[in-house]
Length: 130
Image (cartoon, rainbow, N blue to C red):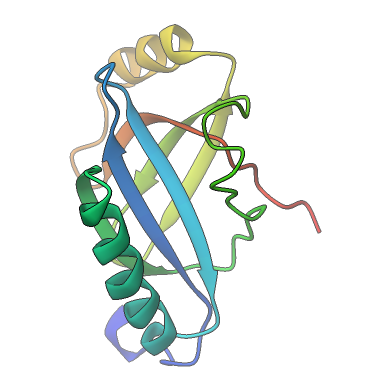
């Protein structure tokens, strides 16, 4: 039962925002626990709303995935990476894609599984291989 997962497990705060060009942008914040994730989510959510960001989704997901730090300073100029993002309350999966067109085509071929939320996103962050 996933609800019995230890509260002290690492959680990723997933933030999905809709960009002006209609593209879904993903940001990821690594946190050591569900409590810290919730607290960071509240703080970041307030900042994003104040800045006028179109936040579509914010959720804490237990995950051992590690991400390179998000940099606000470089957010406008940093290269954007494309991923197929699949997530639920207990899972977070990313598959790097060459570009958005490739990602969308793969999703259409797969007839995206209804069990998980699966979408194409771009992010300035990369998975941390360490």
